Image (tube, rainbow, N blue to C red; front, side):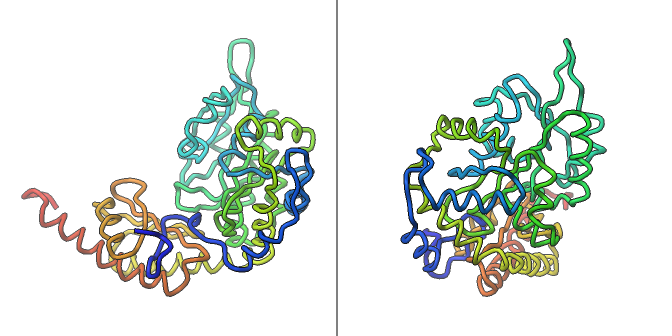
Length: 356
């Protein structure tokens, strides 16, 4: 089954969007140069715009958020140094063990409720090194938190984390893959978030709907090494202004509409909750639904043209985005309600005697 065909409701991720005519025209008309020589004007424009928006002195365009995160961690931590993050952080759960594989970084995790890394959690974990003890060098936070269902770190929490870590001589990296959703949900500005981190990765291909790319925001003294790390990881691109132009178009046209995705997530959550399924109230654009037989739900919904995922055997995940409008979400709700109801009823019929 193709995901782009007529009648398909694809709620697997906000990465499945496709550039529309305006974005394609911007890409086709982009002024380009060789970015490895620092000569692509459209890439430079994107980097400068985002650096200014978030209040950083420098920025680096990368092919993916994973690469941006891994460059940031290698800038902040030398091999053998310790990173503290949530146990369900994207940098651990979805980045192919890259901190250890490519950075030689030791990770120490906290079990953060809803993915929220708080100063209270860190106070008992961040440790000072000495001749016999490995000290903490950096802390990572995720905004919004993917595996927790798009939850938002409050600005006050991030500021308190920043204060604690600064006092301990510890850096902060923010994985801001869906920071645009956090901004839309809270009204917090880019500059306010930027003040709480030493480095920050910003994704263009999720809430903003660009086809490719993330930008790493960083200190200017880190930029030369960041460019070398990007090249060594295979991310050195040439006339990449064609891709950067999509990011610039998205900044001009897709930021204000992100709140619509949150409304659609609320519609899905309310409908599934009314149908009797436990739903974690969505803070942004990710809906997590508790249902036994989640893999079967995914398979059967796909047969009806509704694509979702199952992060575990008892959870179905739906993600709204700019290509999933009101009509798409209402159709998905109808299909999923019917499929989930039938799957749950089947599980009850097949349960051993004496069990619910």
